[in-house]
Amino acid sequence: MMTAGSKRIVGLPWRLLRSIFIAVAAAASVLPSGAGAQTPPATNSAPVAERLTVAEARKLFVCKTHMSFSQGHGTQVSYLRSDNIEVLWYPGNAVLVRGRWRIAEHANEPPGGYADICFQYGTNTYNPVTGRTGGDWECTPALVYASRMVDHGDGDVFGLANRTTAPFRLSRERTTIDDLKKITGKLRSSTQVQPSLDRDRGCDEESVELRSRPTGQRNGHSNAMRSTLSRRGS
Image (cartoon, rainbow, N blue to C red; front, top):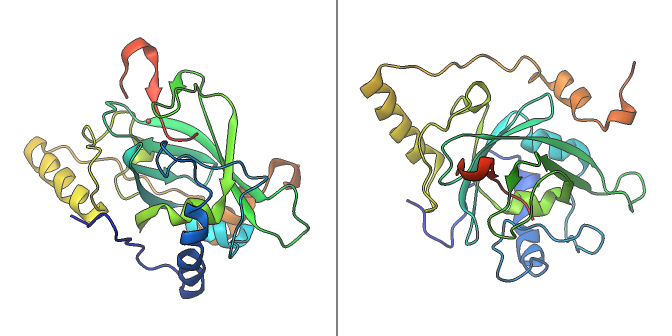
């Protein structure tokens, strides 16, 4: 298990890694207090010391499994499919939360500026930290989002895209992808049920670039109680 002060971001391009760590201190200064690091700041006022471009953000996030940790939400695991669908494994949830993602250049920046990553969840979801229900798009600078990652893996590590129920009820405690893989491996061994690991056919480089563009640029988290799902966000 990782210590609370460490970050584990394995296999990222060196330049992106340098940019992420340079910006961590600046990003932390704009996060609201009392809500945990998962809550994104307003994008029109967030200072960014180093920037991720749209192309860099696509390469870093799409077709990857991400793990984040904050005091407010605990550990969260998500997979960003190539078709702009996010599958979120939220602590305590019995089912997975599906939402939509998009990566676009920040609206107030000239061409070549920094990227925002945005998420939209269903109206039947709520954020247990803020108490807000889903339905609206919520955006944050891609670099700030990256700074919250404590672990990641290539591809759909836990087969989340092909599931509706969570592999098991995820604890809020800080952990690693490798530790969760050990638990899921033991569960599969005991049940002799193997997950469906259909390949995400859009995860080749050309398809990811096309599908990650804003729609206008293309050519022709659960407590199932009260029918709501806990999820990330602000």
